[in-house]
Length: 484
Image 1: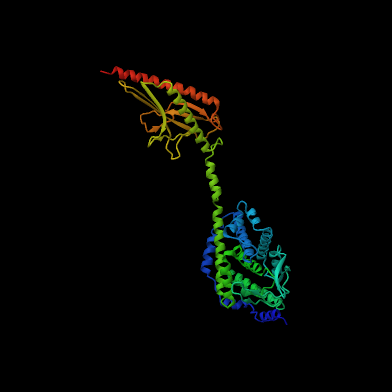
Image 2: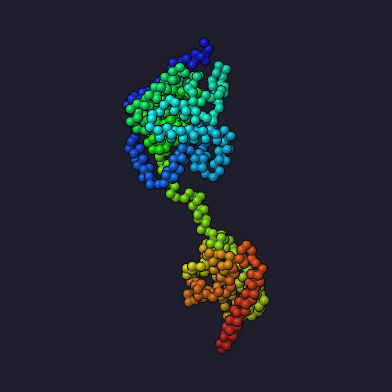
């Protein structure tokens, strides 16, 4: 007998059968206070629509199905990747494809397996060996081969799906380098029959769902009835009982792998409570995950909310507010430029003039239903100044202030209004009482300033300066007449 054959016989002999459910139940307990509290919170969401509830459960299923393969090392995931795929965030399929061409088929097979688990959960009859074999076939459907230890080393061999193992599959634990015994090949059918009988017992069927899930999972991984895929089958089988209790699978993420394996090792020493506690924690995690999904279903997601906010910055006329603001700035600059040209034609030794922008601290405007003030990025209204001064002995200063009003709806035929600030209260702007000095339609400004508008602004500038100079002449004359 070869050394490998001797080692297999030693490991076969070292197999420690899984406990009866009576022994399991006598040495474990479930924190039912936490379980009931979490479930009560979940039941409070029962008023949500079936579509919302189903979507939340679908998300939990996708979490469980994706990471069950990662736990086995079939592919790698991280928290962000799992979140993206589970919630089917934009481009999730692209991200999945980046993991390799075999990852999506594996994921889809595992999804189908959890669908089969749900169908088992909704049936009244107890779990059968046939059902567990079908579950193995489903979860491993996309896996063609598995790695086998032979007399000449490891080899890839076809994976028999839905059939009990025909070769020993004792596991070498990579974490501590020791071999772990599972049921010998000839004992496997007997042990699987015994496991199913335990799952059919009255005591098991009356037990808490977490105890059921933990026991079914532990019993199956102890036996290791299949050539490969036992962990995936065990996690899916455990979910039958949580599906029956709370309509969702147990989500065990790849980040839980170390704690998961540690709790199974501790259970192998006879301390089953550690594994029950682990399964309870994952069940409660799943409840909270689903509840958070339900809470989020009543609100828009961050991207949708941001899109809704951005939508508020689109006028009824279809212009972005930023484009309206920019068009307003261009109009003011054009008016200032043309007024500057008009001023340059008339200034001399006795008359100085200037046109510039500034702000008035504390300037307020009466709310207007049709227009809003043109403002800077800090929210302060932009004030356009036109100022003239005369030389001594008639030292007169005349200043006029203007603001630009932008149409709120900003349809193509709506006007921007350039108005003078007038009134008894110089710090309050009233559009209704302010004379409109100049107006320009949105269509004259967007997408570009029209040639006609440029001509109109030039004519307006000359007219405005003429009006101001007429007033200036009157003030200069008055100042000279008052000289003693």
